[in-house]
Length: 226
Image (cartoon, rainbow, N blue to C red; front, side):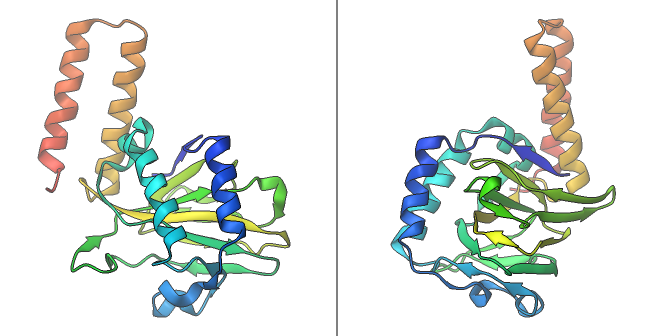
């Protein structure tokens, strides 16, 4: 399931992040890549332990905590601390699959990676190319969103970043261990939650809404892994 999440960050937040990232020192992006990914990864990445990465990442996590659409789509149990990348002209990231398990830096805590997320931090007018290209059972999807908007998708998907041919592409990316590991189960819950919200907004029959809400929570109770 691929879900676009608009306007996670507002213009002021983006301007502040952009200023911080413009002054930051960037490392070779292969530092956090697995063996297979490192062979096709060509970008720059903010050092994971830097003050800028920690501060900006914490701001993103706070925004996620209050975003209903993200919560509905990802059903997050744990969010891996966000990372930041930069693609300059002629940089890209070939086809790969994200690691199934990641250890949170500085801890003994490991996350099962169920959901991947990319948050676009600058305008698509700033660069050519740089689309996030995701393959799933419904085909191939090219994603290039407005600054502040985000896409979440199954971490099991084969995906890549098209080569940037002009300008600079800035993004944050992170992973989620979901309460519901299976993507198909998450899709059912996401669609059911969306239907409940839509029916609630139209003043639908309260007794029917209660029955649908009970179905949602009973399915979540069955599938959730705590």
